[in-house]
Length: 151
Ligand SMILES: Cc1cc2nc3c(=O)[nH]c(=O)nc-3n(C[C@H](O)[C@H](O)[C@H](O)COP(=O)(O)O)c2cc1C
Image (cartoon, rainbow, N blue to C red; front, side, top):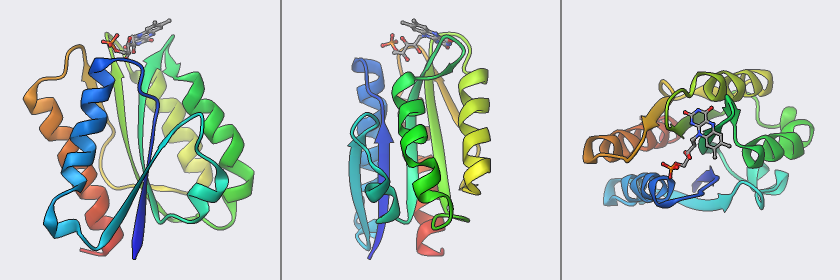
């Protein structure tokens, strides 16, 4: 069974809403062939990544970059996972209040180094998430799931 790893840094009700939107998008019956595992970025390990087949990343933008927690995740897993995870699909959601450009650039550059492939364009959510934002997160999670299941 394919395993999708959700790695998130959830700091507030707004970011929690996005995590829940992603998980509800992945919880539909059509995706029952997919196992979903959720890890806070500060607790996710290289073993979690190695035992999965794709990764959904959710981070706030902080001072023009990804959160320190998400950077810590990448610092820990980069070399242990470099050889064995090439070509994997991933998707990225960044929450911010004004500008997520640097956070997206940072994550995309590390994922390029890992040779992970985006299942869709990175998604930016600014401020309080609307229902359209939540639907967008669920859709992106679905795109990632589809890529992993070879649809
Ligand atoms: C120290 C700090 C730096 C931040 N830097 C950015 C930033 O560079 N870009 C941005 O869009 N939002 C920035 N934010 C806003 C956070 O992304 C936002 O607080 C986080 O996503 C949680 O959302 P919420 O505060 O609406 O609950 C920053 C917040 C803090 C506390």
